[in-house]
Amino acid sequence: MSSEKVQVYEDKMQKTINFLESDLQSIRAGRANPHVLDKVRVDYYGTPTPLQQVANVSVPEARVIQIQPWDKSLIKDINRAIQMADIGINPSTDGVSIRLVFPELTEERRKDIAKDVKKRGEDAKVAVRNARRDGTDEFKKLKKAAEMSEDEIADLGAELDKATEKFIKKIDVLVEAKTKEVMTV
Image (cartoon, rainbow, N blue to C red; front, side, top):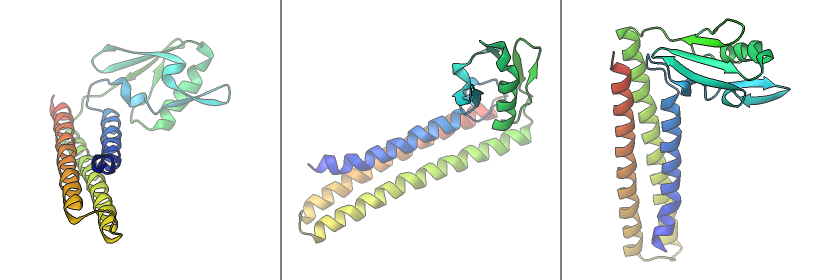
């Protein structure tokens, strides 16, 4: 029974980790990463559609993403969608495909991106700690309502603290890996 009560908050913490992972994937690190296009939606017959569903996205070179739409009439729409997504790169087209060329990042820009990665990691840690606080508050209410003994509440708190530490370490690993990727020339 006690683990079920903690599991609710662990699930919230896991959602934070999942969000951070997808958020970090969308950060440019100087190399072409097709994940920067994950949030791009193309107007496909009036429906906002993910870019990957209307075109083939490939990385022919280290700093180039090539987009080949299955329907050539979508080139203008895809171009517009990429510009609206504000990923910091202007697309170039030859009428058949679209190319995104990633410029080499300056040292200063790398440091700014690394700071941003660290900030996102800190935000994720705050979210994990908020989940722990919510759990602790919930357990205190159970104690006041005399639904659980003080020992059971202490066990739940200890279990929740362990989960929090585990997720904080995961965040540190993710942030460290992304920072290393960004700082690698």
